[in-house]
Image: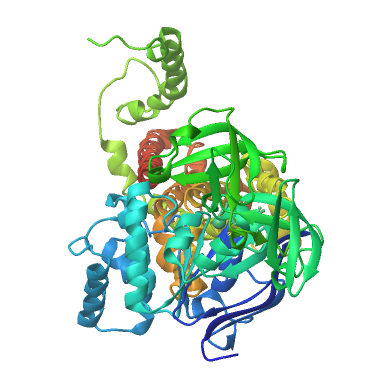
Length: 362
Length: 271
Ligand SMILES: Nc1ncnc2c1ncn2[C@@H]1O[C@H](COP(=O)(O)OP(=O)(O)OP(=O)(O)O)[C@@H](O)[C@H]1O
Ligand SMILES: [Mg+2]
């Protein structure tokens, strides 16, 4: 294990009876990293986080934090702190005492204790709120108090379970920025659980995508968006079109793939490892060009089904016969073509072969 | 004036029924305070005159004071023990996945409906088979059985009313099980604890049947009252004593209900 690794999971699994909530999770989280776990409801994100915090015992595999095995370490002895989904602010204590809750064991004198709490109140931008009762706080303020309460102990890792889930859109976006800035300034490893892909992309150094208890892919946001390995990951992150191709020939490290009747593509054979003879090729809506007249090179003909105006861009639905579902094409409105106004019109689609992403895993 | 919605209109029949019910329940009881101030020895109308002498006599009797002391000691320890047991039972029932939770709960609440006389006889049999002498301790043991369901029923909603994540948060912030309980669980359920203490104290303080079967030479207040009933001249004093017990019990129960209710409103506000 390298010195860079803060958390290491080896084949971690969790069963509730016969149900497997987490399945063979093996990955490392780096020191000082902002790491997100992204997945739909019920995919096992919270369970994984609770295994790290020590509230659930893994039924298989092992967890190391900062090099130490965590098997026999109860939650109150672990070098991690958690921000709970509903914040779990203690209702019988005011803001100061909530934030200072974990300081008891440090046996600080009164002045030092007060100084540290003031420092946290400053950090979360709530100075002067110390004497408020828990029920006199707004959602965003409760969230900040929960953060301060965990950070005051200077943990090695901060675990956050959908910390922004309860906030409205505007506040959520503001808190995202603050959370990111906070993580940079304190330098603590953050592990954040969310089902909001935009949030995961905006905040994280790396994102793990989970579905049905399995980790499907771990990559930086750009990698996840540009090179998803499977249909499930691809459809989770942004919107995506899927085409089915057939490998016709291989020549000098380049595979020639036919897509439908009218279109073909050339891709490096190395990218197709694991994709099979009839690879599934994904392409982002913004990487497809739409034309009212046949383009110079090859063009996939289709019929314009629908057109949705989305402000900065327009989205077209095109029926091609090459795939069952209509293809989604997204065009910035600066480039919108007046000839593409009427549905039912004949259109042609084209793309750069490099925009095609072979799905190498299921 | 704003016209009220139909549903909230006062219902005349229901009001009459409530008045009738309260009358049936409390008018007989009102005879006790009424005649405790009557100067005559016998219960009959018209009342001859008014006096405080029975109350004065009450406090001259050392036997009354001793019975009072016994009752307070029994009820006090019963309240503490059954509330403590109630806390652990309620916590276990709400927090842990226990197989057969429903039947267990039913079993725990059973003493509420089993006649105390059955329990009294059963316990007496057990105690005498084991050769344990009858005393205030055996009374207290019997009372704990009766009071435990009251304690659990009062405390269960407290535990159901707050999120288990509170306790996890405390553990996460570095506190072990005992400190989590002391610094988070107890303060949050405190209104329930106070209500349970008051309620179980009252139940034990007023209980007669178990005390009758399980008591030795030391009398509790209800046993003392029972004993005095056979002496006609002592009857007005018993009425005075009964009045005081009534007042005291009502006060405790009302206080308990009020504390518990205020606590739940506060907790609900916060959610
Ligand atoms: N204590 C438990 N007993 C049995 N099954 C459980 C338990 N906790 C979680 N599960 C199951 O494990 C699966 C994963 O749950 P988990 O809470 O980790 O999901 P999640 O990804 O956090 O979902 P959400 O986004 O809705 O919070 C779910 O199907 C859930 O029903
Ligand atoms: Mg969850």
